[in-house]
Amino acid sequence: MTVTGLVAPRPPVRRPRSRARSVTVRALGPVALLALWWISSATGLLTPDVLASPPQVVDAVGELWGNGQLPDALATSLTRSGIGLVIGLAAGLTLGITTGFTRLGDELLDSSLQTLRTIPFLSLVPLFMVWFGINETAKILLIAVATTFPMYVSTSGGVRNTDRKLVEAMRSFGLGRLAIVRQVVLPGALPSLLAGLRLSMTLSVIALIAAEEINATEGIGYLMSQAQSYARTDILAVCILVYGLLGLTADVLVRGLERVLMPWRTAGPGGTK
Image (cartoon, rainbow, N blue to C red):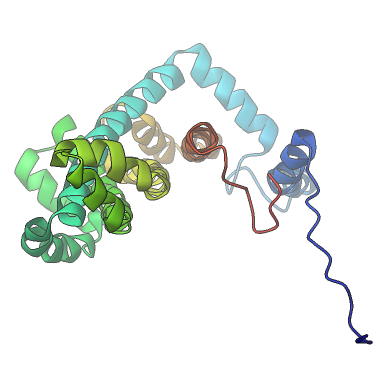
């Protein structure tokens, strides 16, 4: 029996994209914004008192780098962000495993943590200043709090989605809880863990901006406050670009980690890497 009017199915063809093409496409947006900024400054649409031109910003980078202000401020900000991020990741990972893997932990902690998660971390700035003063402790803990909850939510969800049959099978082989978490649960939750790491690293930069508003005497935030006092829009633009590059670098690092730890994952729904 012959059936007419039907079309033979065609399997999807995966067309590999070159690395150079991918990088070029990703760079189009930033290049277009830079060109728009440059043209607006050259034509007078943007005056220096509103926003410095790209050449003026480049000169400001040279000035700040030459006198050592930018390297010192960058080192201070990276130290704050790094220490706070490590504390937040450790807390989020521990709490996520506890609530995701044990029923008692879920019943005791999850509702409280979900309530705390809804509190904007920016609202904690005045309270942290009262509790810890205006020293480095308040800044680092604010970053830690901001980065804890994305990691907690991702870890808890990833652990809960672990195949329970696999966990029970490992228990039948005599593995203890710690061994199951290390050898079964964490590898199975790896995509969620990396998603939480990505969110936390990006949020650590946002929290750093807020933290450095707490009467900072050094760091990128201090440079911004000094530039604001003297209406130096070129230095303000440099600081904003540094914050943006820190966030972009964090995202690129996590993407690279994903490619190393999960090389089987594709980059998009079309299946192309």
